[in-house]
Image (cartoon, rainbow, N blue to C red; front, top):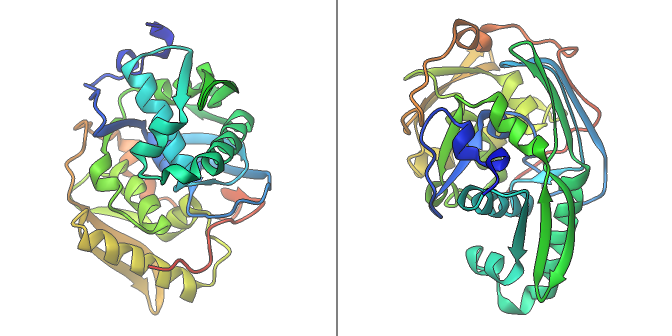
Amino acid sequence: MDKQFNIRKIATKKIFVSDDYLPLSKSLMTLPIFTATNQTKAVQLNIKAKSFFSYENLEINTEPLTLNHDFNVFIYIIQKLTKNPSHKIILDIKEYQQQNNIARQNLQVYREKINSTLKKFQNLSISFEKKDRKYTCGFINYSKEVGNNQIEIEISPGLLFLYEADKDLIFNLRLDKYKKIKSLYAKALYLFYLSNNKNTLNIFNKDYIAYRLQCGHLENKVFNKNIRAAHKELLKLELIEKVEEVKYGPKVLKYKVIVLDKRPLNVDPTPAETNEEKAAITEEDLTTNNDICDDDIPF
C-alpha cells in the first residue's frame, strides 16, 4: 500500500470502500472538468476563472472530457485506487466491460476508446489556488498495454492534490443513483448540486451553472429548455426534491434547489462559501476559449 495515494488517509471523514460508492473531491464535481458534451474531436480547451466558489485563479487545460465514457474510465481508476492505494494500477478491459454492461463483441472498440481517454487524462492540467496554497494537478503520468486486455496506468500525484485541497469536502457518490441518470446535463447538475448542498434550500446563479456545464454560448431559450429537461429528470428520479427559477421579468437569473441527499460529510460551510452564490459574475471572471456542451440534448 502506498500512503501517498491513499484517499482514505487524506479525507477527514469516512470513505466507503465499495463498488457501490465513489469518493470524489468537491473539485471533481464542481469544476468544469467532466462536462455535458459528447464531443470526440481533439480540441484543446483552456478554461479559466478568477474565482469559482473557493477556487481562485483556476485554469484547466484539457481535451473535452465527457460524463459518459471518459467519466466511466475515471470511476474505474478511482475505485481501484481506493481499494488498493498504489502509484500504479491495472485496468482490465474485460472487467471494465462487465462493470459498464458493454457487449463482449465490442472489446476492440472499447480498447481503443479507453486508450484514447487515457491519453486525454495524461495531457490534462488543472491549477488553482485555495486557502493561500497553489495546486497544479493532473490525472495520470502514462499508460501502456501490458498483457491480454490489460493496461498499466501510473497515477499522477497531482490527482491526489485534488483530494488534498478538498480533504474536508470528499463525497461518497452513490453510483446506483448516479447511473440511473441518462442525460449529460442532468449528470453534471447532480454532481454540482450534490457537492454544493450546504443548506436545505440552495440558491445557484445561472451563470455558475452555465460555466460548470460549459454552455455559455447557448441562446437563453435553448439553455433554459435543456436545464428544465435536466431538472425534470432529476425530480423524476427523486434526486432533487424541488427546483424553482428566480426570474427578473422573463429572464432566469438563479435556481432555488432542494437536494434530497443529505450532505455526505455534514460539513458546515464557511462564511465565504455561504456567500459565494450571491457574488456577481462578469464575463471576465469566468472565461473559456471554447464552449463545448451539446446544443440540444435528447431526453
